[in-house]
Image: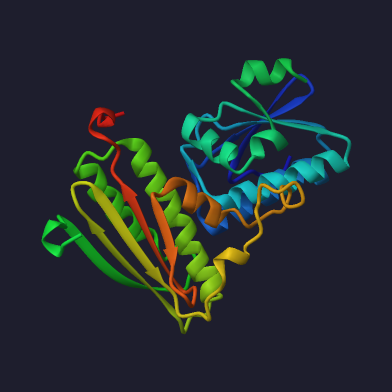
Length: 117
Length: 147
């Protein structure tokens, strides 16, 4: 597994669970690196079931949303499944306003997310 | 809003580099926390400023290091006003595609302006499109509790 700077990656069964090391996903370089690490999980390591846990994320900008959208496309192109979980209310508001709550499968917590695969 | 009702104000000129707005942004947020603005307001202002600064630096000035971004902020007991001006050619905000349109929903960018408008009370651009004024009315008294 490639060394992760921005992510903490673990496995629960056949699901790859991803936590974010950065509480605030805003800075340009950080977002680029986060994106590359997420994409590598799919394209480099061929992981098919991804659950992104946002419990440590207190802030994220729209640029980070863009990376998630691109990730979703890559996962779908590989026949995989992407889910999100543990999104704080203020961050969820960002997904809802941009209607991305309809694009992504967002679950209440990690347990709910894992059970939904 | 008459000038003598502002309790705090600042102005800065920042370079067209990603992340260059972080110091003034933190200064403003710290001021809001000091004056007991509720967390949702602080989050909203943080997000809107982040998006507006990225727009000015990346889209307005096109990361041209010879250009700068002017940031001015004024805070009263009930309102924050932020003006961000870049040195670019401007744009037409009305021409920005709706990011929630199904045709655009999977586009990787184009949501910043929508988020600014959703989280602030007022967002206005000058005719050229290189200056934005954003205001946020402080949450009502019965919502004023620390989170």
